[in-house]
Image (cartoon, rainbow, N blue to C red; front, side):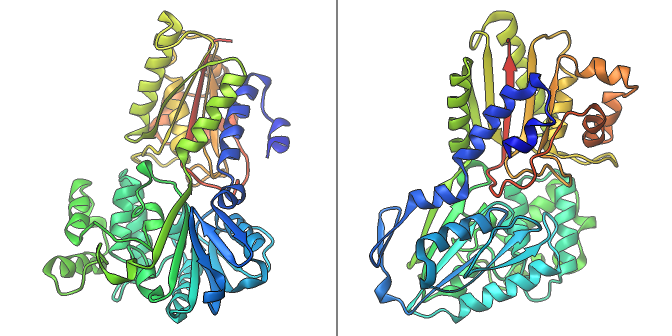
Length: 449
């Protein structure tokens, strides 16, 4: 990835790129899985728990997510011909060369027919597992959209429309996944229920704030604490009830009334034979990014890996800290590096193109005022920011002047949620291609030379 980016990125942004790349390397799926999974003879050790492979007649690999192909390759490297069958669903073009596990490419963030077809096969393989089966499930960011199996009475079109409405409303990923689980036969513990009585190991690359197991990939292998009433409350909170398909509203009301069962809850027997292991998260990426920034000579402050909220508000807060750093040397002296992670939200009000990272950088640039010697980078670790081919964008103290020279009105672009075209015209998009990992976003602000 570094080689392809260096050709296009101005020198003034290179240190920010190096810090970002260090964070990515910390959460590469292959090395992460191999840190947690080792094979010694016929004993597979997963995060300290031993499994005697001689006790199983077959080993099945299932899963979904943007990092799925790289995760599956690592499992193939460990288990090789011991794998009996497998299928994973990944976002289009997020691929690896695999020998035993089949790859199904599908749509993200809005699910499509390929995702439905893949989920059906995943569910059938899980359901065919018996007490002598070991099922290894690989879950990473994007799994919620990629593994779509609507509950009875819900159509794929219903789920597509509901997902898009929630995305446009500015709902958090936790809220979106709460709804997804209650419209699905496979999410919210549904896959664990289908797999039982097989032994189930789930390896997870976290893309949600706080690493809540029930939210990552909508928790197909863990109990679901949410309820149908929670789903209705989310619709009311964002005033989107009139935009949700009637079939979905009817399904939610039936769940509230108790005429259809709730999602699987804690204490049910099919969770007794499961192990869930988080192999990588945003905090790990930030720690490595901090190490790199320190190595480059910056005084570094890791603000948080759990930032949420409206993107523009988060951007304003970051620039306020950067300004304090520049003017008063507090909370740390220059040269300084401010790092944060998590996942913000964008309420779509315009008709432009962009993503939360590009919008963060544009909103931050508008707050710079007369600040000097500052670089801003915000990017998605999966290499995709919203519905674009960019991972994120850069800005510095020259951004607004260069925009004025080019005849661009940055506030107008922000109002139209059109950050992509703004940064594209300035040549300040970060394009990495697929990274085959996904642990939310990294934000890097460099203050001082």
